[in-house]
Length: 253
Image 1 (cartoon, rainbow, N blue to C red):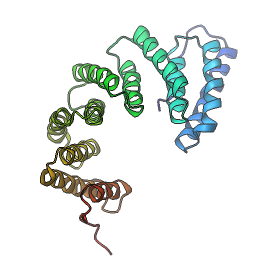
Image 2 (image 1 turned 90 degrees about the vertical axis):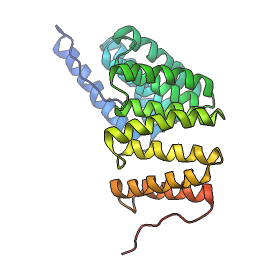
Image 3 (image 1 turned 30 degrees about the horizontal axis):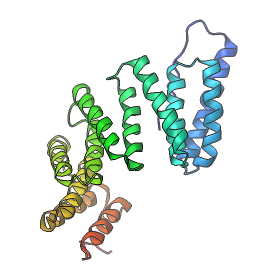
């Protein structure tokens, strides 16, 4: 979730600055609620803050756009899909108008929109938006930038969920090669992409390749996070569920 950027407006009065500071403080509280898993309490706070930001800062102010994007995320997390999509689509259009199509803030909003479509099962729209984000992030940030890797992973997952598993494998294999070369194996995004690729190989009937991929991801996660870390254990569970056989366990003390 994006944070308050505190962009100052020249020529504002002390009262205006105090009002903006109050909105920033309330926004920080809403973010704390959301990160603590309390989307239900974060939601009404953000709705009030968006109204305040529009009145105090203006509808096109950068902090207003940030809060609107966060509101969309919380709507979606709280199960208010229609409201979430409406706010998110408006946020994408506003950011493109304010910052430009290739600005990282615009691309972040579009990435959220693609992910929301994928979670709703609209894989065609998720792929369409996601591929556009990948192309833009590759131009702006590079193919192995963490944000670009997240987008490439999302597109690969969308292809897999659309039952286009060979396309998913191609996308994820290319992303894995770039992630591995730039960051190494014991890196969060490399591990996530490797595990997703292994799952796709399993779906494609390539069980030996899938098992090898999962075992490598588990080993890298053990090195990066620790053998007993929840993320490492999650990979072991995924491997077990796919193959119904034990995976390498963390050593006992």
